[in-house]
Length: 153
Image (cartoon, rainbow, N blue to C red; front, side, top):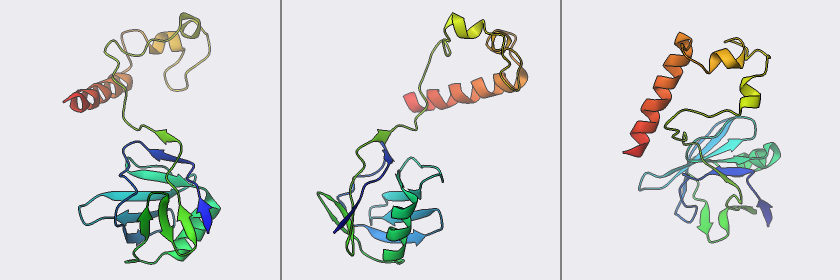
């Protein structure tokens, strides 16, 4: 048995100990689902991560992709999800994709704010963090505040 250990997994990914079915096989992702609607997306390294996803090394993704076919029934257990002679273990590392709520905005250390370097699009950092904000920065702040407010509900 060859063990595949994901690089990371989303904290919001579903529990792996469910009766999975293979939904779709793509070049960058593999989608597993259960009858209840839970979706586990396996991402090839370097191709992003989703709220219900795990990230696999490129070579592990290729091996798993080759062992699966649409409609296949991987066997789930305490130690992971088994496909042929491959055991996809649950990730040891987890990450959160949820935006963090910061009521007063991000606080940057004074040493960073006073640096003369440019931020890229908005000039020196000291100008980018103090009012009046550039219109694009105002729009970004507004979107983040809306997102944080929805999450608190």
